[in-house]
Length: 578
Image (cartoon, rainbow, N blue to C red; front, side, top):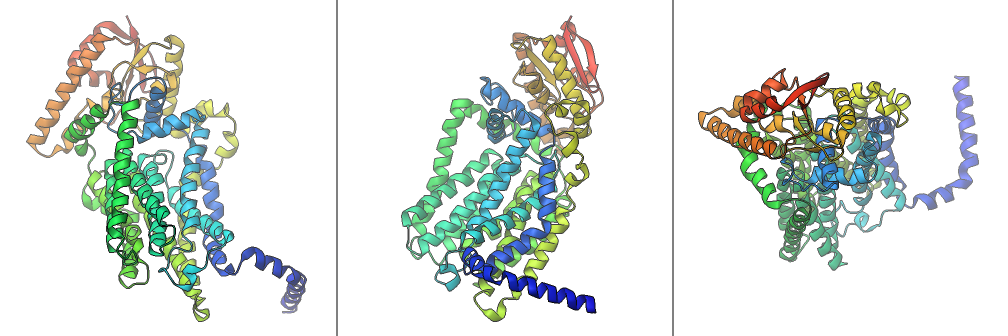
């Protein structure tokens, strides 16, 4: 007991010495110290694990999809035109992002991951930086008080912690995916709309409000370049304009601006694609070829998709936000944010695959809604002194959940990366590559095969790849010999036929496959490749060469007569002319 008394006396004397500093602290903090204190109470508990996970993630290598986008971006930089010179079921967003990041040094995996994680972090923090001051109805006392810079920075840190904690649940395979790239546009789009609604409602800076609505439409429409299902996020935006009772007669004008921004995005991106690719081939691939077979590959039941962790939580949080809007506690401008999780769920169900990264939009909106709820509690309850303890309950729950998620990050199992792979040379070793294998994807085999190709072919030579990893072509710095850069994926219909379900669908899939197999044979005969990379052990069979002969007999015979296997690196077999 005496020890406790001594400690208390010492603390009291120490605080007395700090009392002269209080005016300086108050001037720095502003009159809203409680607001930034609540933000820090959310951010700080999980901050260490989130930062550590993010830093470890920056040392991850490439997975299958990231490697595919790498090749698309590299080929684009070296003169190929998207969709004309390479068939691709993905939208051009992956090629654009990877092309840009490769120009910034992204050929080094660590640099690429820093650029990708840095962009995601910037978007996450921007949400929290901007939202303070915009969560209450226009005209309330708290809403009219301009938040200090410190408040905005602290809430930016809080939202970065929340959104990054869920993102770091993903590993090297599921980060840097199209769903994450789409969020770089969807989240700022929703943010711009919220700010635009407030400016329009208060009749100040109305021109800026109109431009923000147009920018919001432009951004959300551009997100469709990642995945067509991202277009669903535009409908809650339009609904928010129609139901916002604070806009008072300006709904039609602002809805027009929103739609004008979407139309502008369509025109701009069409022109951009015409400059670097083929819009006609893109439309044919997206709306004719892909729907024939892709929906049936690895399709999952709706009950399996709905049973994943983020779905139930997202439904609860979305219902809470919608309920608060219906009761008038939250402004109607947040209708789009409230529906964001449901739109993410709709996108999941339409894709019908249930891959982990398909949950990223749903999960991001769930945590965004949680942060919005905490910010609303802080803004609302601080108006009344007797209610100031209420936000603490919400903060404690949110902080606890954030810590729980952050400490489950798979990145924390690889803390040794920080020391073992700190230099560019260490990230070019077998020890590094072996950390990024995943079943049929063997990073080490692709790197060894690429090194051999690079030393046994000329830079102008073209290589045919039978498999689903054109990453090997990027590593070898050799262009594909045909438009079928991932031929084993589009021309082997084992998975599609297994999921077709009906004879009519199977007939359509088979007809499509025969058509594309004939086209492959024509392209190979017109321009024989300098080498072949045949991948074994893919999802549908152990022998890639036999797989090629089975599904593409004409092309297989052409290659069998002219090429012989020279060397093998694990699952990668290299063939050269006889």
